[in-house]
Length: 244
Length: 66
View: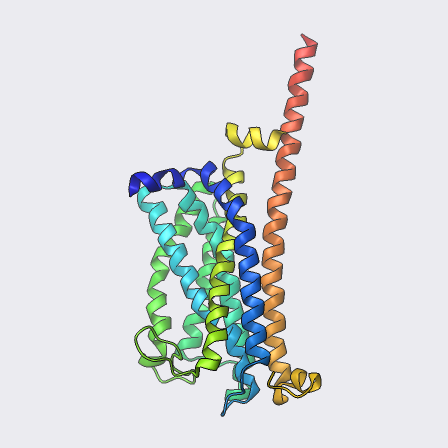
C-alpha cells in the first residue's frame, strides 16, 4: 500500500491532482449546499418548539461538525509532517487552517444568532461554547505561529506541534454537553443511536454536512496548490510550467 | 414549500433577522475565503511568471553582451 501511496507525496503529482479535482469538488459542493439549504429553509416543516428559528441548524451543525473534522484532518497532516517529514503534509497544515477557522467562526456566529431568540442571550460562558471558541483560537494560533518565525520551516514545525497538541480539545467539545450542565442541547445525530430528529429534517441536514465536507476539500485543493508553488518555485518543473 | 407567500418566507415566523443573519454572514465568509484563496493563487502565478521572464531577459542580455 505504501508503495502505491508514495508517489502521492510528490509535490508535482499533488499539484496536478488537485488542479484536476478542484472544479469537480467545488461544483459538487456548491450544488449540494444550495440543495441542502433551500430544502432546509423552505421545504421542511417548522420545529414544534422552536418554530422557524431552528432552520439555522442547516448551517450551524454542518459548520460545527466540519470545524472538528477539519481540525482532525489538520492534526493528522501535522503528525505526518512531524514524524515522517512529508513536505506536502506540512504545507497542508497551513493550507487547511484558515478553512477550519472560517468553519468555526460560522458555527459560533450562527450559534449566537440561534441562541439569542431561543436562550435569550447571544453568548454564555458554558462548556460547549467556550471549547468551540478555544478551537477558533487554536486555528488562529496555528496560522499566527506559522508566520511568526523568520525561518518558514521552523514556523511550520511549531505550528504543527500546536495542531497536534490541540487535539485534546476535540473530545472536550464533543462530550462537553454530557460532562457539564449547559444550555446547549445534546446531539441530534449520533453514529450508534437512532437520530432524535425527524427524517424530513434530517435529509437536508445530511446533505449540507456533506456539502461542507466537500467544500473543505475543494478549498484545500486551491490553497495547497498555492503553497506548493510558493515552496517549489525554484524547482525545474515549476519553472517549466510558469515560464511559458 | 411550507410558506404561503414570499413575505412569510422572509419573515421566518418572526425569526427572520436571526435566520437571515446566520445565512448571510456564513455565505459572505465562505465566499470571501474561496475568492481570496483563488486570488492568492492567481497572484502568485503572475508574480512567478513575471520573475521568470525577467530572469530570461537578463540571461539573453548577458549572452548578447559577450
